Length: 126
Image (cartoon, rainbow, N blue to C red):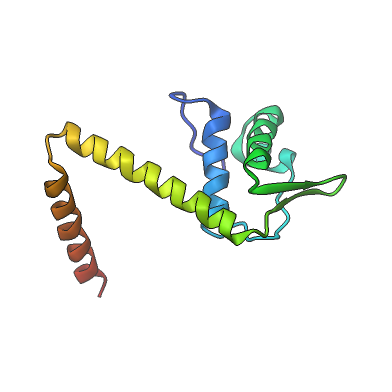
């Protein structure tokens, strides 16, 4: 099944984000071997060079380590993974707050709305 990618941003950046999410949410666990570039490129329906570029960025961030002639493995540094998860969450929150401010909400109103929505969600899940 092809990944949902769009043309508003570079494809490699979208792939990078999807792989980061898979790592921080535990789909790919610390110390786990990753599928090959070719396999993931086929899964995402992209050129292997595009997938390789995303992997290069993952290696640069330290989330992925290349084992010469053996493939790539997710780092075992759980603190590094948690730090990446936190950075991603902060980025999402900043984007959310920016969008809500564009709708005319104050920070207090945004927080109130988040609390109301969370409480409603909690009540429907129990």
